[in-house]
Amino acid sequence: MRFKVRMEVEKELILNMGKNPSRSINYYSKVLLIILVFILLINIFVSFFTISITRQQSIDYITNTVNLYLKDEERKLNAVDHFMIWTVKHEPLIDKIEDAKDMAELPESISNFRSRVNDFQYSTGKEYQFFLALKKENYFFNSSPIRMKYSEYIKIKDFFLSKNTNSNNYENLYTWKSLKLNNKFYLYHVLEYENRMFVSLIAVDDFLFPLQDINLGKNGTIIMENDKHGFLSDSDQVNLFKKENANNFFSSHLAFKGKKNGLPFSLNIYVDHFSAFKRVVIAQFVLIFATIIISLILFLILFYMKNKVISPIQKFSENISAINQNNETIDFGNSSIMELEQANVQFKGLINEIKKLKVNIYEQEIEKKQIQMDFMKLQIKPHFYLNCLTTIYSMAQIEMYKEIKEMALSTSKYFRYLFQTNQNFVKLNKELDHINDYLAIQKLLHAHAFQFDNYIEPGIEETKIPPLVLQTFIENTIKYSVSLDEQVRISLRIVYTDTGSKEFIKITINDSGPGFPSKVLDKLQNDIPLTNEKGNHIGINNVIQRLRLLYSENFSIEFSNGSNGGALIVLVIPYLIYEE
Image (tube, rainbow, N blue to C red; front, side, top):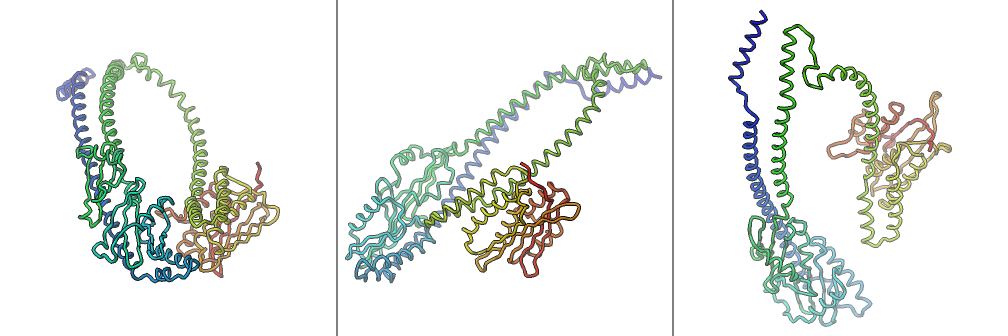
């Protein structure tokens, strides 16, 4: 019976081998080589196709961006033209300057006129400078903040006072001309009316500055051109432009004619696609090289698997078949596979490894919990960095030096606390000092928009508290309650409480603001996360999660709106002495 079964099995194997004949390793090597060549050709085609598409997309992007920019600048130039025409003929502030009896009356009139011009600059930008000249009085002064050196200003003054132009020449009302001064080019427009000369001036570099962010490659350049001076740029840049000015696969020359755009100049843009797309080209070659390496590795793996794995397994299968026919136990030693010989020993060690694994998993969970704590603290730390820096910058613009010193000192203390706080707990008095530093910053920002008072029960300053918890709630109150309409009162109260079995500290924060919105309050009271897709309210969410990680369920926090309005937060945490 056994012999008959064996014959049927061998017959079936022979039939299967006929359907799927075995191939030599050389055959598979040739197939692998053909596949490799095919993949290489595809990669080369895809690489050039990708570069071509990227090049065209870059040209389209640059063209659309420049056209939009030129259209906006055309609007600004037209606005400047109309402003100058009206100002030079009808501005009553110029009449007051002309009617000034002595030099004592001039400063106020000039200041008022400058304020008028500065208001207009909000629609065009500070790069457009304005100058007013009165011929009879021989006055020439800037009507807007100067964006040049004083020596250049003197040359500008001499240039325009020495010009011989006709008054009320309406044929040239909308004509912008170019001027070269100290190897620097400017566009200017001048209008004369009776005794008045009104000038608008903009540096070519300032005009083109918004286009500098366009990726033109290493040798890419933007040059302005007009009929008077030709290329309005330094000679080195012009020579480079003329040298590289050619259209090919890796470069492009884009011309934007002034007449077509209604502008008194043209723009020439040279795009160095090769350096702009250098990373794309390198990535394509890396992909081709990686394909070669992977194919070679696959070939070596196939060869190795045949000699070191497949052949021993086939031999082992034959040994098993012979042993089963004789009803004998499998002998791993006859298989010539070391792994099978060691299977019994490895199985015995498996139990010990499982025990160790449980310990490792437990330790990893603890480590994961600590990492999560650190991450949530890091989310809070950069919360209003940019606001502080922007405020200092704004103060510097209006020369609020005293306030800048106070802001810098408070901000320094605030950030020092954030960067040095890398523990799960800090002393309560340290957190209170940090809140005072934060409120000092907010006082500079909001002046008298809020009033803060606090009561700390004596003797509990040494208790420990998670860092940035109180500051987060105070910050949330400042953000959503403080306004310029009326002063908001913010109160912080921290007292000791004893339930008999455990000691706690009770923290109460309330304000006289509008209180929590109903939807927000409903989520807070029902323990629903507040964070939306934009990441708002991440501070409150982080505080609640950190409290759970640190105290488990041994704390309580309640959110409500007071009977007289305003938000109310009551937090109760264990009373624990801070130990250094």
